[in-house]
Image 1 (tube, helix red, strand yellow):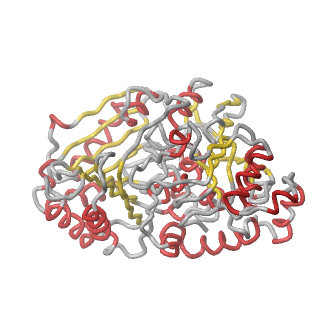
Image 2 (cartoon, rainbow, N blue to C red):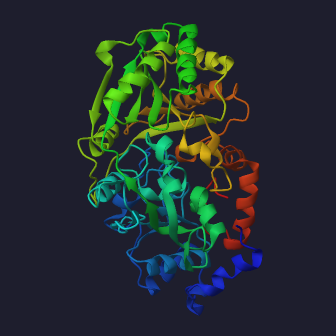
Image 3 (cartoon, rainbow, N blue to C red):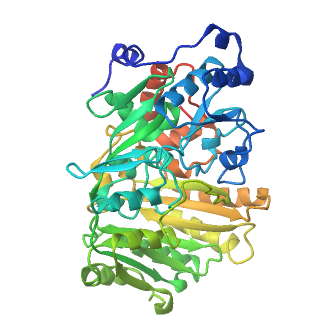
Length: 508
């Protein structure tokens, strides 16, 4: 179901919006924004504020920006007022949930914006009669996983990093190793509470404002500030197998690497694989190992009886037993191990994790061809081995599709997301120390690594949560959304946000 243009236009008339005073209209730009925020007695920070650094230091140290102000909101009304102040004064607005945007778009992606910090919106409540969790947009996914599990052993599919905020993660996809069973993080959204560009506040779901509901799941940063997520949880699996097999001989040559990956790919497309399997292929910066790893939602006995024999028979090399393992654990233990930390809990204040990186991605709905794999592994073995690479790097090749995958049951009519039919999503990630300058040679190396795979993969896309700021806007919109979804989003943008209040360098 879609809204007509008249129905969409009525959103502003049927919802409560803030009114701008004559004095506020007299000013413009940053001066006008600060005056408006002050007049409305909103809680905001400027560069001279003591807490400025803690609210504006970006997760990606490579991309640091200077906002005009940071609204540290505690209520929906404050967010509404802040959006109206920014819109009236020509200041772009972006939300900051956890601040993990790869491109630092939660800091604007350029200087001079209003950042709406959602960190105070961190409540988590589960209705055990429906399994629906009501979650503030400032919640981080480690705390989300713990919070819903403690309220009835509930679970959601989502990514692995505990410090990532739900805001960007859930509205731009949100893949986790249980996603082949449960879907993407965004697929579990049943409603969103959102502040729109005119300051109005609505709840969007499949019955009320369905076109807004569609757009927010994929492009929320272009349409509003989501304040609350309503998420359909599932009963947490009682047993999860955490597993990995290392195949160091697979990287002895280009031909060996191609044979190894094609073996994994053939296995991933076989009838043995079901929706309970999460799988990725990891290649590290020293190219010393080729690791296939993931999770299995079930018992280790079932995993050993079905998955292990078929996988090992498909890869033409024996795994290194010293670097391979499998263990049956509980749901929370599995998430903790995937997160790489001792706990999923993240402090509500003072979170200061950082990295210094440049990442790119390739998505494909079809199996990777031999030509694509040969060029990809030739680049790795020629330029990425040992100390030859100018930066540390890794590639993660995650299985999204394949037999039984929940992702393949949906398409772009369900949400503004082009990747439901993807088979593989590849992240190529380069990094240096936080206190170093990321070298141009590193940017070139990572672009070359990504292009080696993308250039031989017709119709490839890219993944929004690995957002790449090096793309020009039009190319970014093409690889992230595709022409059909972009056109639908653009038409909706002209109605809901004609002044382009919610914008960043790659927004609709």
